[in-house]
Length: 77
Image (cartoon, rainbow, N blue to C red):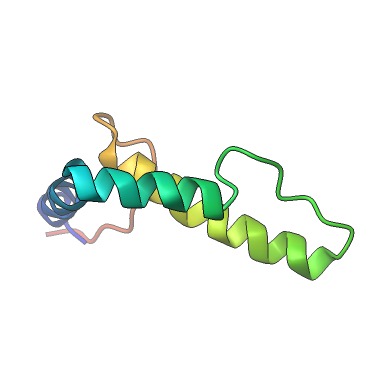
């Protein structure tokens, strides 16, 4: 992805999750996907699964942030 592609994608995330409905969905995802709680389980595979869910929510939140803190794949133009 080029920097312009990333900027456009971030704008799309902000459009989707910036609405009232999108905010409600994001809040539901935070609760369901352990965004603010421990993902630990005595079963390792369950921990991995919960952590995967959590990472999706964290990625969405990062895409909504003003500053880009994640490393998205880029290609030289």
